[in-house]
Image (cartoon, rainbow, N blue to C red; front, top):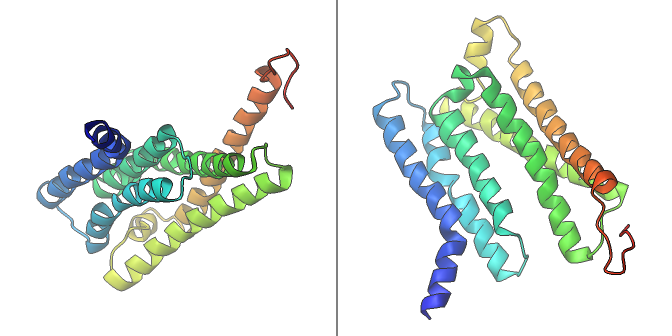
Length: 211
């Protein structure tokens, strides 16, 4: 019983750390940041539920998602929501936005690739790789739509429209840039797969190369 409780605790540890950092971020955002937006409060409070749901589904349906992938999901949430959205690093560090969205593209394709390999027991075909890319782009688009709807309903500026207009930049530039950087991250993942297959091929026990 004790070992089972310990294993469960270790399994949920990345989600717990994400939630604790969300609490710290919430306190800092409420006390240190001068401009407050309801949409950002919602992000800080509800986004940590994602890894908990992911781990629960992983256990419930035996998806077999490895812990390192879940840890990467938690890391992305911390970088994007806690750092970028709440602490304003998107505006303070121009490269932060590019890093987070590129990371999302890479992680999204890696996630779909792993799930396919987990259930089909074979590498995906090129058409499947395209589907993974489209699904990743769709997820990025859903987040952009959330920002748009939140800004519309809550009169916030998660998309940075006011800042873009102040700099004489089209507000559409931020959205399109985010989408393209996510695609670049996905392409980087596929490039890494190609390099691994060409230069570090796996070998069968008999010494032959695996396809």
